[in-house]
Image (cartoon, rainbow, N blue to C red):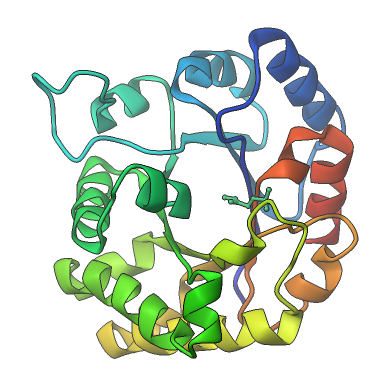
Amino acid sequence: MRRKLIAGNWKMNGSLAANAALLAGIKAELAQPACDVVVCAPAPYLAQCKAELTGSPIVWGAQDMSVHEFGAYTGEVSTAMLLDFGCKYVIIGHSERRAYHGESNELVARKTARALSAGLTPIVCVGETLAEREAGQTDAVVGQQINAVLETLDASALAKIVVAYEPVWAIGTGKTATPQLAQEVHAVLRAKLATKNPMAADNVKILYGGSMNPDNAKELLAMPDIDGGLIGGAALKAEDFLTIIQVA
Ligand code: 13P
């Protein structure tokens, strides 16, 4: 049985004051969560996460990282820096990075390999656009996205990744994939993982992301291959995030 994982992706939101209130609100209600909980903060706030969350059941992570180890890469943040600030997870290949920062399947694969070699757990994001879904290309698109990552990994490394299916048309739009529709894609993804390592594929957590909220979380999380959520907007409100954790 896969333990559920609820991950908050704050995106480019927050401030010292707002984060302090949000983290205090979450911590106050989460003595012993029955699922894993992670918050992925903007890089400047990772020190704050470390200060506020050390010793709590909540772990923290980053939203992106450099593919390079160190050196003359202005603006980039390395895996060693994330480790310095206690990160356990890093989101890789979010559709916003793919769309607005030109991240290719190949770069996402290389970043995943770098995160793994540093000992970070990558949350590898895949998902189709509305046009791709309407053209019947969903399975092909997510298949290509995940295969690019699988091609660079050893079979044994598969157990160390988390995958997030985030249909682009459902992100921040209030339009959630129906549980059945999400489940179909999750099953396709698990079958792809199984071609690499059938035993490990059974244990890989596949999260759903895209307008998950307290009202729809229960039905989504009840699906056999949906092992948690990658939550955007609802992760910025302690009450909503806590309700989703409770449901999980
Ligand atoms: P929303 O929950 O705001 O739709 O964002 C989902 C997402 O992109 C999480 O990474």
